[in-house]
Amino acid sequence: MTLRVRGLRKEFGGRTVLDGLDLDVAPGEFTAVLGANGSGKSTALRCVVGLETPTAGEIEVDGRAAMVFQKIHLVGRRSALDNVCAGALARLPLRRSLSPLLFPRTLREEAMACLDRVGLADRAAEPASRLSGGQQQRVAIARALCQRSTLLLADEPVSALDPKAAEQVVALLAALALDGLAVVAVLHQPSLARHHAGRIVGLLDGRLDLDAPASAVTDHDVDRLYAPDRAAVPAE
Amino acid sequence: MTLIREPGPAPAPPGRRLPSATVWLTLAVLAAAHVLAWQGTGFSLTALAQGWRGMASFLGDALPPDFDWETVLQPSLKAAAVTLYIGLLGTTLSIPFALVLAVLAARVTAYGTTSYQAARSLLSFLRSVPDVVFALIFVTAVGLGPFAGVLALVVHNTGVMGKLWAEAMEESDPGPREAMRVLGASRLQTALHAVLPTVLPQLVGLLLYRFDVNVRASLVLGLVGAGGIGFLINQSIKLFRFDQMATHILVVLVLVIAVDQLSALIRRRIAP
Ligand SMILES: Nc1ncnc2c1ncn2[C@@H]1O[C@H](COP(=O)(O)OP(=O)(O)OP(=O)(O)O)[C@@H](O)[C@H]1O
Ligand SMILES: [Mg+2]
Image 1 (tube, rainbow over the protein chains, first blue to last red):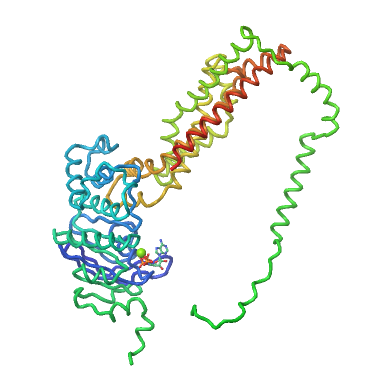
Image 2 (image 1 turned 45 degrees about the horizontal axis):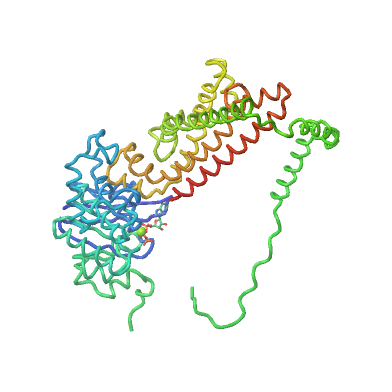
């Protein structure tokens, strides 16, 4: 398993946001996470990459976890390539890491291959801020690849993108999973999730309420995640 | 909650709220402070009225200004250039010190509590001692002249610019910093690859603003013997040559306006 989560709990000032989460993700698996606003999706992902400290529970990652965000977080004035190179900061010797001018040639080549994988090799020299939202998100994904990650977490990677760019980015995530990467992506578009992901998990009030192959997930399953009180009323 | 409702009058808006007791108390304290300040500074309209005669004769002596090229205007322009140089070096030479201290003193890039506290205290100290005081100290150390002025500005400006830069870094978008944390970058790498490139336009804007301020400050430093046109103004007052002083002041006016316009222009250009 690339990711193994057991009994993950997170409280913010006494309020329970994650209430005992168990989740296994295998290499090559594309898991989409659905859930209403405030159900704890971001918190769960942030716990996995260490941006939040869990109150209790175990998290094991086999290899390295990378994360991309809805608000992309590239350095706009730097080139796409330099942004991708930053993915390697943790493994560079300090003195070669202080400025993009000092990045080793081998790293620039590796970063170029990552950009090529997301289809943006021809925009390598462009400042990130000049790329479209969808292209920027793909640069962020290339940066995650340059991190040599085995697990890619994506928190609403396409919520700010137009439908076509969103489709492209989610398709890219699916393709990367086919390469063997474990992908966990929070999506607010159930249709995208069902079309591209292999597996869908649903969070409801900090608990796993749904975990099924994407092909087996019904509209009713999805409705229950977003409107629990109404779905609880027995159907006529 | 339902957002679809029957047509009909909306509920009445809540009543106006009168200023609270806190607001009245604040106003009363402010008024009292002004009465004390009025007395404490010997503020007197009668003294001002009686002094108009002195002002008039002063103006009479100053006008017309003495524009003699050899003895007044040329030295004035040369000294103005020195003033400009003092402001320039005083600003640029403080860049490395201000940058290091700002990184150490900004919560988002700080290394540890000790260096954070030390950097904060040093910046506050440098900022709270006026540049004129530093100038007087350096004049006794390296002698009268522009060099003392440069040193004074470097020291004081490090304090002010370091604080402004640290604040700009703290207000920078936390997103790129989080991205760096996730990919395992060190604090130094985060500062170099996420914080500084994001706030660079703000840092340059503040640098230009400080250059503008420092050129004006270097005038005052000249008054205490640290070179430049301020020194000439001081001399002409001591010699009662108010007509020469008027020329120097006109030159200063042109210099200050030029620097102000230039830095405003560049700041507009680099605005993010
Ligand atoms: N740093 C924090 N401090 C306090 N409460 C927090 C913090 N971060 C998240 N929360 C709370 O935890 C709950 C879950 O938040 P989270 O961001 O994980 O939800 P989400 O499922 O990602 O929702 P969304 O779809 O809106 O992104 C929310 O009620 C939120 O207010
Ligand atoms: Mg979220």
